[in-house]
Image (cartoon, rainbow, N blue to C red; front, side):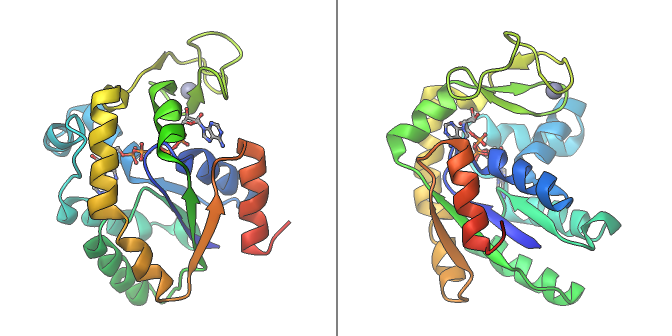
Length: 215
Ligand code: ADP
Ligand code: ADP
Ligand code: ZN
């Protein structure tokens, strides 16, 4: 299975990508997670990316395209993969198409999570992320068993710098202007599957499986 999980910030891409990755036994490739890891390690890439991420802007296409190209070549992607948060511009979508052609593989579907803007803001502003493993929680909709502690690894939970309300509004603007046009690109290729992402985590997962024709 080769999938893209698409949608505005806070739509539930990471949450659904994780569930799908577990179900199919294929890797979740989240460009946001890879960039945050680089920021944590303080590499040159991380330092550069941070200046964009803190403002809610996109990291330059060449940088992100390079990251994904390297990642897709690794052997664990041979059986499939789930792209989460990439592509985010038409240029990235075109670059991905070329990469996949070179690798001799095809996408199965682009799952688009449609969520109302007010719901997205509620989701993001109460999102908590594990500093250690990147697992994602929500203080109300998906709380950890123990406050501020990751169920999966015991690591501390924190609020992402870019998840504060001021930055969130800017990210939504960036989404509408630069990312939404990617939907047309995939619609034209017959790959787009629109899903009502306003439902509960489990209901959305069932809808996604239905759209993919699996149970
Ligand atoms: P969300 O899950 O809330 O949509 P992400 O974790 O995917 O956020 O991304 C966080 C930030 O990382 C983005 O605001 C952007 O600065 C950067 N980023 C992630 N993926 C990309 C991408 N494909 N192209 C450019 N920037 C990206
Ligand atoms: P994205 O990767 O698109 O930015 P996430 O998967 O990180 O989105 O989800 C954003 C926030 O909303 C997280 O706090 C997550 O726990 C919560 N969330 C995800 N899916 C749902 C849902 N269907 N209903 C309610 N909350 C959700
Ligand atoms: Zn953790």
